[in-house]
Length: 429
Image 1: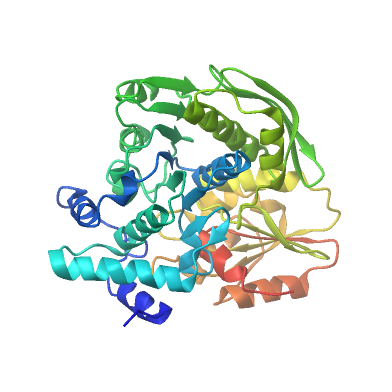
Image 2: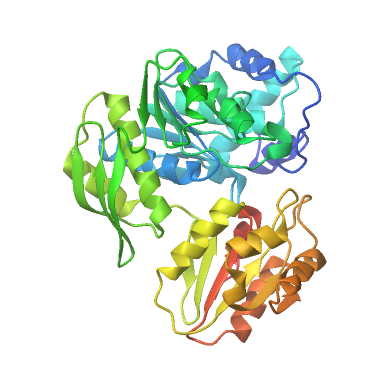
């Protein structure tokens, strides 16, 4: 009997979830599980060429922009990204459409049968990655765009041999798993670069460059040397960009996303697509794609009067970008920050990066997530900075309180974790 969506979710949740319970460095990492199961289903990851995206920040946005650009070329594109905000099926999409419950169940049932046949026990993330590859192969997409879940070298997505590898940047995040130094993290992220690929590299630290130069890439395109954002201006509803790629300059291009950092992601995406085709992208294609791109949970406006913004900043660099982006908005009222974060991130450092001292109130909260930092710890962190804070157990309740105490001119920023943002998206004005 064909599985229902509920059957598929039950199977999925019966496997170890390293997104909720972080893996340790014990034991030698391996892609053997993924390779064995993929081989048993005919290596669907090889059914179409692919672009592989990693980085500490910006990889999800960059992957979505790459997908939009490829779609604007008239190609059928499968996008695999993580984590999901509201529903697990969000991770698998084709041409902007999320996989149906029936198709999702079909993929997982096939993987379950392979698990029983081979005796190979995948992780939850392995299953979702295999489901994406199998679905994309079945639907005969023209291109796959795969976002790394964690690191790169040993990530489940790395069984695919991408012709273009994108590294957005290298920062200090997940240091207990792929750290502890930026050099360690760079080595892990450089592991997605396959022989003969073009590496589009957004990280410019000269101390890290030798790590990437040691990959088997056929070519390395480096930010500020081979491509750059020439102008990055605030515009109504997004940014106005002048971009330079190795072959072309695009002027006054509208990007429908907020934040100067999204301009940095945009030039990575345009360059990656140029590398994929081996030729410039037509000006009108770039304009069409960037004017329409959407990235859920990244400075997403869900309410006005007061202005309510969701941003999945989950590390210090992301929090700094969120604070800078908020400065782009001309608001006359106060700031209220709804904030929750996960273990491995210091609440004081995160609140400092968010410029929380400028907020009238921090509403501390915690997502329904095993690694969430306790509400009381966040309250103590805010108060140690001299910021008024209150703790609210649930994210939905925290957002409701923030809206209640805000005036029409205030701005409410919900941030600190994609899991917090995901729960906040369920709140309706």
